[in-house]
Every structure is written in structure tokens, then in C-alpha cells.
Amino acid sequence: MRLLVEQYVPTAERIRLVVDNRNTHTPAALYSTFPPDEACRITRKLEFHYIPKHGSWLNRAEYELAVLAGQCLDHRISTINTLREEIAAWESPRNQRQTKIHWQFGTEVARVKLKRLYPSVESIEDPVGPKAS
Image (tube, rainbow, N blue to C red):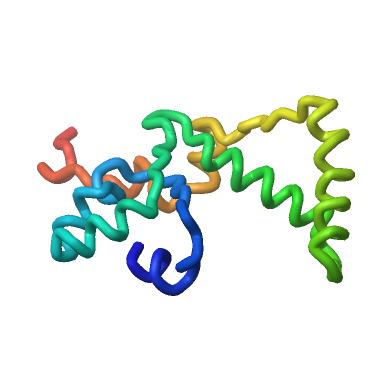
């Protein structure tokens, strides 16, 4: 956070942070890392926005940015005004259609895609040994 405040955007009045970890990304973490006066100086420039505990809207934002990059930003754009115009042209019809995200990663798909994390019946050995017949 200090690097963000001091080097990356030192002229910003306020930096809005969208954070997903309520346990570590807090002003208290800055006070446990830096002396109080330095932590206070850094914290004054930061505005924390925490994503919901269940169901991350940050994932949705990342998905939208990926779609934007693939459909609109796949070429060199020479000026900021051209960039703004192209994004507005992409965004307007998408908002009018009220495009939704269709999450299709259920349990069955997870078992296929994450097969290495799911044990198979054959891989589980009986700790007692073979059963007597």
C-alpha cells in the first residue's frame, strides 16, 4: 500500500481499493506493519471497498473486463478520446441488452476440470487391509 500511495499514484487525493480479503487487507494491517504516523498517512489516502463475503462481484468485474478486452481492445488505440469512444460504443448496446453472466461451473463440471483434487475409489486404500472372504 505504501508503494501504491508513494510511488504509483502519489498525486491522487484518494485511492479506492476493491479488496477481497477482510482479514488482511485492513487499515489495522498497516498499523501492524508501519509506525503509527506512517500508517496514518497511508491510510488517509485509501478508501477500502470489500467484496461480499459470499458471491464475489469482483469476479464479475474481471469477467466483464476480459470480454471488453477481447471484443474492443484487441488492437492499438492511439488516443484516450478514441479509447473512450470505442468503450462507449461497446458498452451501450451491452447495457441495453442487460447482458448477464451465466455461471456454468457446477459440481459435475468441477469434478471433471478438477479431477486431480477428487480422490477416486481405486486410489483410496483400506487402512485395515483386504477383507477376508
